[in-house]
Amino acid sequence: MIALKTSRIKYLLLSMMLLSSCNDTTEDGVEVEQPIQAESIRPPDWIPPEAPESYILMPPESLEIIEAAEKITSPAPQMDVVRDTIDGIAIRTPGQISIPEDEIILRELDKVDEAWYGLSYISTNSYFGVNFDNDIFSNTDYYYTNGIQFDLSTPIFAASPFAWPMLPYKKESMNYHGLIIVQNMYTPTNPDTISVLSGDRPFAAYLYFGHFKNTLSSKKKYRQYSEVIIGLMGPGSLGGFVQSQIHNIEPIGWGNQIQNDLVFNYKALFEKGIYNAGVFDLNIFTEGQIGTLYNNLGAGARIRVGKLNPYFSMPGLAKKNSAESKDALPLQYGILGSAKLRMIIYDATLQGGFFSQNNNYLIPASDIERLVLQAGIGVYFAYKELGMTYKHYYISPEFKNAKHHQWGHVNVTYCF
Image (cartoon, rainbow, N blue to C red; front, side, top):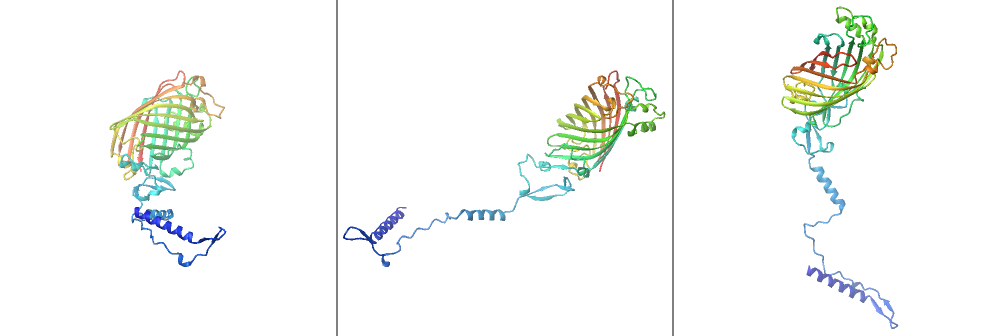
């Protein structure tokens, strides 16, 4: 550093001497600029020292080019995911593909298994179920006397025009879309009389089809269900015809049934796991319905005891090699129980439809029981892709002077 400063001083003195030699003074004291002689201009003897090799001065543009080149030459990290689509809808399917890092959002995972739950998927599993309700299991033949439901769930129904009003859930989950067809029938305590039985339940029946979406999140221990239905209540639903085929003596009171009316309803359910470990599950749920058929709100709890597939990982069953099959058991058996308290706002099977006016007999709104308890207990058995359930249900009186009622429910579901 000392040598460097000394050289700079010499160079400064030399420059001052050259400048002074370029000027002269006249006799009147006025400075006159003299021409510079070529031989008086000489390069300085000092040569700047070279910078250390570790310091290379470059403009910012050059640094950006080098950094970009390094990014190009370094391989982009990749991750394996299980994903496919049906008509542009994300689903789960066996097999692996790799996607570059710039197309995903990386985050720290608690465990490797969480990589399965980074997106909301539509299951590749398909289900067909048959449900049959009848009060013959309690040796009665009145009130809710018969019901049948067919449901089909398959990934293609996610593209149905009825799928748009389903409840969204964009977090880590598996989703199941399907169609249902339902016919339910209700009669008074004596269906074999043509007279109107005042103070008893009116004849009623409805037939509808609908779209449902069932969402399961195993990580959050959460389930949500939504359903939209459209159909017909009254003679057009063929309730009297179906019951006459079942009974040896044709019920003749169906001429007094609630008349034809439009059925349009929306249902939503939210369920959360409280304790889910080993052979015991405890969940709580809340639900609601709104429309021309039912308007109500409810809340309750569900328990399961036995050797059963995880409740929030699949709807009971999973086919081999599906994404859910990693948690599936080949043999299942257990006891199921549920109870809920429902607040009744409107029930068209008691009070009539929204639009029909020519009904022979209805239950007045003042006689409707606004709080109704419903409970059920049953058994479940499944082997691989086939499952069977029997549950026995109880419901408290739905209107003044009504009876307590019970019925049986049978379900058979096949996963394919």
